[in-house]
Length: 287
Image 1: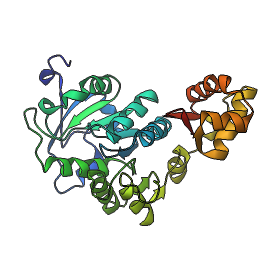
Image 2: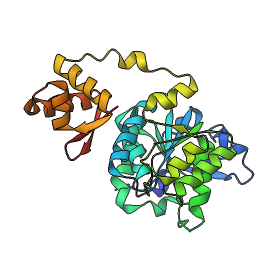
Image 3: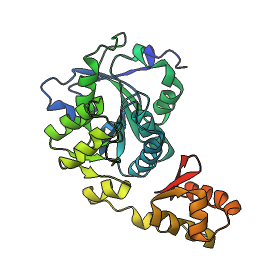
Image 4: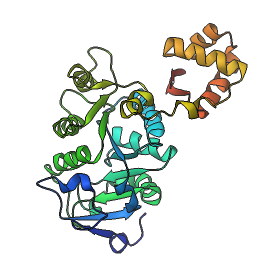
């Protein structure tokens, strides 16, 4: 639990040099901010990641890996809810630790289910609220928070969104601000990803990995990743993963020639090296 939270908050006035420049241009910009953590993150390059609470588990895992890589170049900006927000937080904390979570209410309204995760954010990144401590979360609070999220990042990635989703509100605001929009692709007819597919149809960037994002900003982290050394079995399974995009462990073992009894350990090693992600049910996807 947070200790003496109210008395440990930093107040940031609109006139302060620490106040984010991205918000100063808004006609309804908050006049004062309340922060817990590293306020210097507000002056660095930022990228927004959102997703509905009902984002599928495999999309959350892929999203967390993407965010882990993107956090090496940008401070990740997200909310505090389950689903897509949590994946963004976990990915950033597993990466550079550069993460800003914007609250929909005051600090007294922190979501209880996520307190332990948000405490880690306060220790490595930043918790930020445009509301006084005792302000409750109201129905209209989320749209305003989504607008602030969209304004803060240079681009926005949507990990999961149905045709009607709060994540799409963030994307619409980002588009109105002239920001780049990114979205994970979903199978046709997917109710959980219909909003993401609609964003791609309208010109959003189809996003399967961090290169799809970083490349749009002229950032190249490939050289860093290319230094990862692989064993012979890791190389075989990685090539099989790249060919299939995702597959069951038995299918990967058959395609790569690596015995199934060894494949699980090899795939775990590829996960550690950031080249594969487990989707559950003995299925894996390439990163």
